[in-house]
Length: 348
Image 1 (cartoon, rainbow, N blue to C red):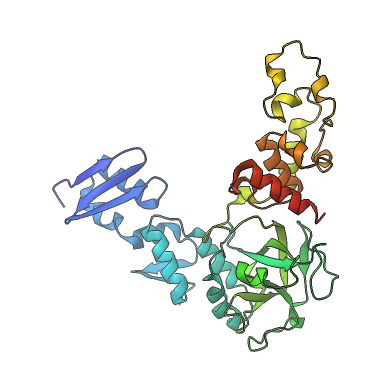
Image 2: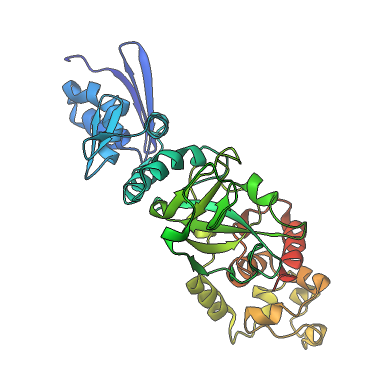
């Protein structure tokens, strides 16, 4: 290729016209970096291979993955058609499919061939994303006290790691309700248990999937191991789980440290008040508001007192103390967040 193609190059995107077709890639995708190098070096002979989806996939597919055209293999075995199509679709849009590669690596550690074949049919349901390690992020219905519906003995408080002997979990998909730990899609979890059920967000390592029963149209799974992330506050993204929305003990401790021992609570914790216009204020207007040294004090505040607090600290309280997943993304502003906080606190 001798003549330079028409192109537009910015810091965040590159567009190239090749053989009458426009190709646009955003910053952060493998094609973007490759095309930028080709254009700056004027290495036009290398241009065609930078414009294919396969070239993107080859960049993301590391280790035991290989690409032949649009077909992807792992250790020499072709990936399931649905998984292959999803990876190609993501790469075509410039989205990083690394989580799907990691999912299949974990899935191949599963000793059950039937589990490997059925797991992806479960993933097709809306709201079944993957975390950065390729683990499934799913929903679970429990009693208001965080105990399981069936036995009332399994604790599912946020942070709990629940395990069950794999050889005791029913692996027959023709048997609808049987022994094992149950998780599922949101529609399944919302229809399971009593009306006062509590919906949780959990993580499942693909290697611990035992069975996807036929009776719920692949909306539920029986597993032998899962971790409780936190309390459901709204539907998750369809493809990926944002780690910053998962409450962590480190975040909780850091947030507490930020507000421990500080004297300017009015500025950090409370919304703007008349005190801001009164440099000689004695502080008596805040005498009735308890001093907040950690989030446990916020448990004692009623709904109207929560309204006095800054939105940022309310979000930290919801995510890191009440373990509400996605607290920063609850729609409806402060009113919706406080309403959800009040509802969730009833379960503790």
